[in-house]
Image (tube, rainbow, N blue to C red; front, top):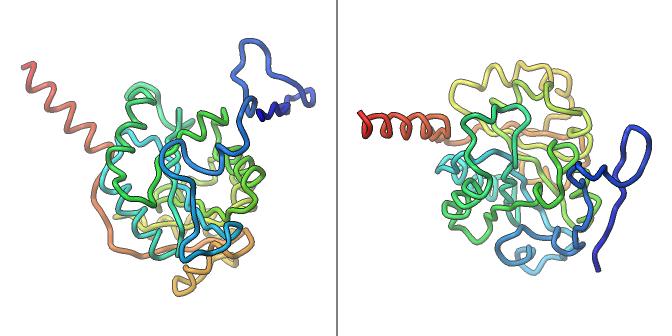
Length: 246
């Protein structure tokens, strides 16, 4: 059965205009219980399906690199997750379109790099038609009530988190795990959001319980760092191409 869900407009609920991208229309219910690629999520150790713990890593993956997999593998271990989904963004609202590779190319790079049965690249935001993280999380929670989601991001994102669309809703919708990144720790922990939600911070030693907590709750994880950067990779590629044409 296909579900046709009205979208909310500034005038109420209804269908999108003919020239507008549908928000959550024509999405088959069971397809959102797993990423586009890979097998359906299954709990470890025969656990009840309703107790699945899923880490969500959003990003452009422009391109995917070893740093992404490094964080995903740490998250599986430190947060006691069943799986980590890489939500490849159609277009990050905070990033310029100029140097953004086509979506299909970025998704392919994520699939090629993952190489782990519990790390699953996904095009779910494209299928949902969502642009903002807040919308994606609300829909995933509504459509997958048997899953416990953990939003995963780097310390650099925490610094500017207050600029995200409806950032407070994100905090009150999904628990968050923040992974340390080189040179960002102090600024991240002194950021507006970290200070405002200081009482919601979970101790590092309790990080494995994060998925079972009620939001707002977040943890800052001091873990082995990885120096890989998508920006550096793109710059290196551009330099190589310039040399080849020189």
